[in-house]
Length: 259
Image (cartoon, rainbow, N blue to C red; front, side):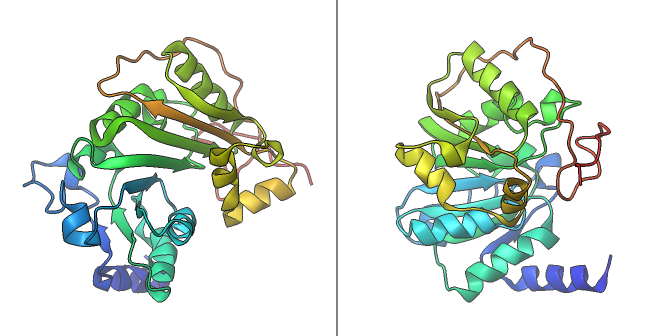
């Protein structure tokens, strides 16, 4: 591990708004101390909790927290060196409605009680084209989310991936889940508050994708309590471009972007 990463991990251990539990979900553990108590014991208010899953550098978590001071935001990711950027920015800006949780999203229900979360944002996740169980919008993950969301809680997906968008759209259609917004080109969509909200914050990599002429897809839907879900049985063309920061997409070789 490079010196820069070691320094970032050292910082994170001292940050009061960062909780590092990378292997928590894999072993039998006592209940996470803040599970069911995030509002009163950490945020010290009764404002709704919003998660960003796969938050990366935390740009979206911090951006949302700045725009909506009447909500509490928690960025979740397993990669602490990336998370350091958003965690540091939140600390420097004195944001009191931001926290970061370093853990696997597979164990998200170990950290929140039923109904403790109002909304979930999933921003530019790896589409995981080879294995559906790793996709953050697959039925196993939606079931996990249903365990922590309020009934009919909101899930937002923002993605550059045509594959993940098509898959998610098909899954929602098959299971008759209530879709409130759905667009294949977020920055040409008009008129809806949730679309405006999704377009208001633009990450660094998102701006790079847009500069390459790619479109950003967005879906907002509601997730009922205890849903019975089935996977869609469709063939989906694989993404054929190289995403920033990845030499391949989910282990599937892809051709370089045209110069």
